[in-house]
Image 1: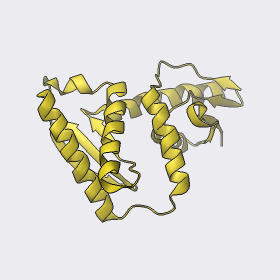
Image 2 (image 1 turned 90 degrees about the horizontal axis):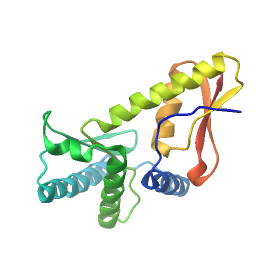
Image 3 (image 1 turned 180 degrees about the horizontal axis):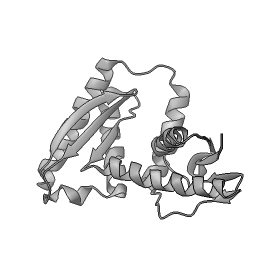
Image 4 (image 1 turned 135 degrees about the horizontal axis):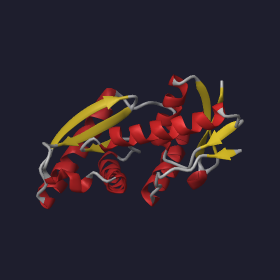
Length: 185
């Protein structure tokens, strides 16, 4: 097996996210309804808005629901102090806190996704580069390329990128060691 070395980081929040998400998904058989996702989004937006007010950080909040998840995006004009919260580790921690706030009010597990100042798009671009390097290794003769452990959401993004590029991927390992392995089609 060939490992692809990257500059990606895995935070404890990402690892907790993956373990909790997989455990909840295993015990949940139905997708949330549109109404439930709207409620999750509203609760999350209220929580984030209060946090931004307390920290005196400017940001506009957008709520969306897609793929069975509530998506909360916080954006602001360039040069604002919102960038203070846009680091991947900070976004992961805030996402976990927001999920806990939603779960506290709804009584059910939340799979919401939080994006701050385009942090999710930036991470998706990083994952695309990671996949590109792994594919080069396969094209050079490696049977497979293993990526580092990452959250279930990031693994889903990787699976989509790999599929778009005509390769095959699957997840291996358990808990904090769960990672994606890419092979030729």
